[in-house]
Image 1 (tube, rainbow, N blue to C red):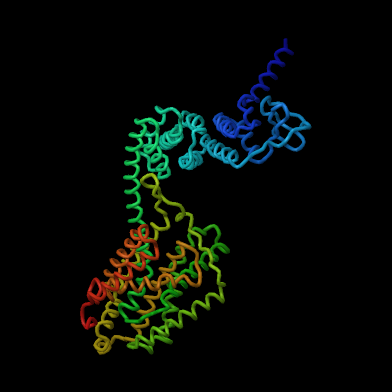
Image 2 (cartoon, rainbow, N blue to C red):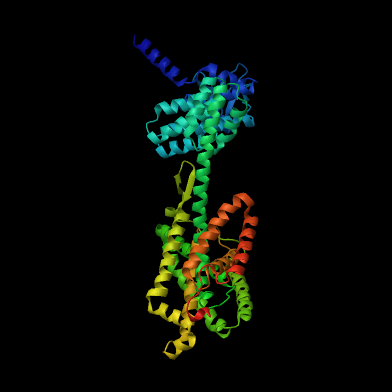
Amino acid sequence: MKKLLLLACLLCASLARAAIDPALLAPLTGDDPDARVEAVGKIGALANDEATRLLSAMKNGDVYATPDGKLLIASGDQAYDVGSGASGPLPDGADGLMINNRLRGAIDDALSALKMFSPDREQRLAAVTELQKSATLAQAPLIDKALAAETDADIRALLRLVAATAYLQSPDAAKRKAAVQALADSSNASLRPALQAMVAGDADEGVRVAAAHTLQALDSRLARTEFIGNVFYGVSLASVLLLAALGLAITFGLMGIINMAHGELLMIGAYATYLCQMAFRRWLPDALDWYLLAALPVAFIVTAAVGIALERTVIRWLYGRPLETLLATWGISLILMQTVRSIFGAQNVEVANPAWMSGGVTVLGSLVLAYNRIAIIVFALLVVAGVWLILNKTRLGLFVRAVMQNRRMAGCVGVSTAKIDMMTFGLGSGIAGLGGVALSQLGNVGPDLGQSYIVDSFMVVVLGGVGQLAGTVIAALGLGEANKFLEPVAGAVLAKIAILIFIIVFIQKRPQGLFAMKGRSAE
């Protein structure tokens, strides 16, 4: 009796291991490519360890087929029979299972879909989000099984949309229509071709009508999402232009210095950020995520010191001589770029975003607002507020405004105009360094970084009105939004040309810019 019980237990264990029906495995050894792809989908729909093991082995090329149609997973000189659960030596005559590109794609899709059963919520969410882009009818059973097992409300909502996407390819008209209607609230742009094809050529009139309504609703949501996305990225570009132009608004707008080396001051601020990152990696690796906070004062001080040195050695002798100033600062920009190339090399260097600035927030289903761009928008507003406070609420700001409006009178009442010139140029240069910190978070840092922003910076200052802080802010916002809304229509190059033509025409009609200068300096 005990022997019979033991035998029954062993038999049950053997059957438990044989989790895959041999009938499901049979098409894999056949010649019908559609049947093989369908079999992979059905095996994936089992959503158990045996299915995962087989699909992983197929992906790695470890599955062999015997002449009598058995599938074996090879491990060294041993083999595991997927259909019976038995193990033993790899038999003679077993050949590697042929996996073509189409079947390999089906295997990858099935393995990716199996992550929907992970105990980790984030992994399940990522799998469902990825599957939303390319769900197929073969994956429908697996998706239905995941939907039945899912308890998270947000993931269940996504799974319903994924299931509907898969059933768009169903031969059953009723299922296709139900799938189309279920997708009425989707924001997935990749559904448009399938819906358009159904509107144009589906055999069932009810499906065509439902597809037309869903397509109209989808296009409306996509247009709304695109508009909001353009507004956000226009504000993001405006914040970058504002940070790049704010220092120039002081050195050019208030002092009248045509500083062609302003872009290189942005570059120096970016490289100062890079050095702070390297220093934290070497000496404070546990606090690496906070290197950016240390980079802000470092970049400001370094670029302000460079600006003060330039003002004291070169620019102080060129006040009132714009052409000579332009040529001198252009030469300085070349010297600064070559100096950086000699120190850091000609290749770009990477400045990584801190962990708290990585990633983004998803809104409206598909629009991702990057954290680094949100942080730069907030940072730009803080810098503008700081500059306004300095110029309007401090003793330095009072002296700066006095010297710029009437230098002789300011000197007569005891203001050291030379010292104010130095400090004003240093302030503008330091703000450019802060702009470089922000730019380092949007891309790689290289010796030519500043060249991309010098022309745009001058356009912002001139359009806003020379010496007008409010005009600089409004001009940066206007140019940023205009760029983002024109680029999809005309392309990046034509958009910039159109904006440049507009500014030229605008300045011809209103030379003082958006806001006219007030006081004696306007004369």
